[in-house]
Image (cartoon, rainbow over all chains, first blue to last red; front, side, top):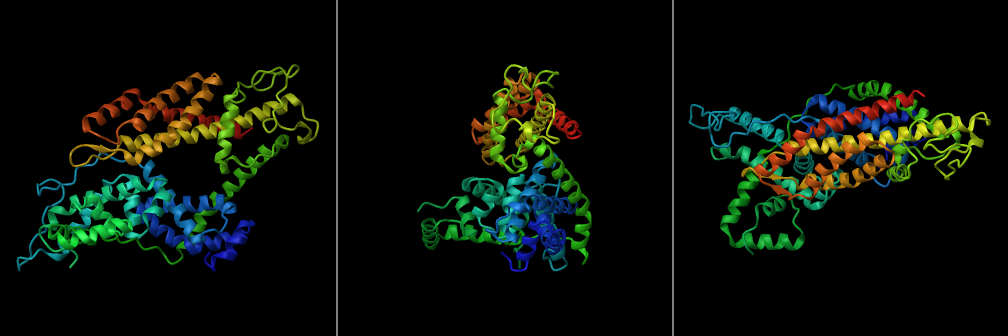
Length: 195
Length: 290
């Protein structure tokens, strides 16, 4: 367990509320950041922060320090975010434009005076497409993708957090990547990525 | 090695192929320019998917979170304290149900045995309709020890009725949570996005749905046994829909999926499940004021 958390966890387990307060204040920002990545929404992330600490409060006496408090907190945050995503009504989404048509997102960034795609417009277009693609992911795909791609978590850890078998976890990540690539394909052809 | 699949490319990119698969993949890349290009394209595209910027929080964010959390913790303590008093009533020393998945099974087993959800007993009867004067229920662990009741001289009938109400609340909670999980799973399936070819992949949802089928079966049998016919009817409809999803193909055509979705829509199943869940929550809320 994290040396800083150890005494506070022990005190909080014995009912010391000020120790629990220290844990909350120490880890709130990290929980918010993870929740925001997973939900993509500031208000939802704030709800997840509250739900996470409430759940931790309820379950703290059962925490046995086999993993670090931070690892456990991470898992509870993922669970709360995943639950929220599953409950959140998903509106019928318009398909992401993939063929350069006029509807939806622009297929190609505008060119600047030198004939090169405008970098700012281009970056903004990439960002919009990624956001749109994220909205099209199912809760399991979104959570698995964020944890693997942005958080660098292993598939085993992700499967454990989501209650999925390894095969289903792999498939969730794969489907998310496919959707992301389809969303980005039209503009990927027009300029170099990431340079 | 044949050309790797798209999924293998993705898993290779994330370092998730096992040792043998990874070695075969690398070996194939060494001799296949097309696959090297495919990998380079994938890596370029995924490199463009960068984390979104996270909104900044004030420097005293932790303190603000704590301030918002405190009232909820107070409610939680009050709730836990009330729950503890329910359990201590009659010297029932079960652990709080929220902790025990295993307890849910015991609760259901007892419910199936016809001991739960009985109508409120009339004077002279205990839950389940057994006259007090003939064969009082004395199953260990399911009946309060009246000698230990607060005051030490409680009326056995009152104690039995109170115990029945406690059990009813527990079951309301368990079935309510099951319905909530089922509703979330159905909503996820109903909104499952389609693939390029219009097919829908349900494999990730099916695992969860299979677990729900097993739970649902227990609760449905319990409801039948307890004479809760309206509840049993909704659970029966729910089970049929869940079984269809769980046992169906993991990848279905758009047409087939629309049929399944249409069936669920037509029955108003999600609405019914929601109403039943709400009814149980209300029962529980009434119980908590006792």
